[in-house]
Image (cartoon, rainbow, N blue to C red):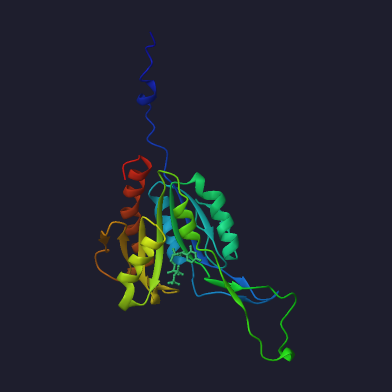
Length: 233
Ligand code: CTP
């Protein structure tokens, strides 16, 4: 009769660290060989969240756009366009338990990229744009059991709550960080967290530095992602 049946549970190691995938920063969609359509995202909020998750013991993979900072102690991948980001996240997502999608993804890209430079001599130009894929909705919709998905919503203050909640449902995320538009490229944040099912949480004290907000957010999200991984949430 085997006597070591319980040996696996006598291990002194805790559960494996939660594996978090954090995407942040802007996309750049090329118009020609020297120009692009971008946005004002700095990537600071996402980088602060990656650092806070790392400090809380997660194994973190960062996927960051042009100009967004690297984060110490995290695996690092880069993107330029929305298509790059989609490819990077699709390949990394199956190996992770938590997605924090803080990237400022272009909703439109030029229908075609002109080679060389557009010339002023050509006169007035119209730029045809086509929609990009909704990356968050795609990843959330194709998740395996155990995975937890957090999105972001940038909204005008007067429609923040209603619009963020609609986005949460449309994209099938587990939670969404709702921020007023002024958050982009700012040092502070005045965000709140909305959960699928209708619960909401706000950090005590209102507007605060992105680092502080990131620690509050990590503390809110981690227990929920851990529960999901255990099949409880
Ligand atoms: N997002 C995405 N793919 C896109 C656009 C946005 O994955 N093509 C993600 C963002 O990273 C964010 C969330 O969706 O986590 C909400 O982004 P936001 O720009 O607020 O919403 P949109 O889907 O662009 O909707 P709208 O422009 O109507 O506000």
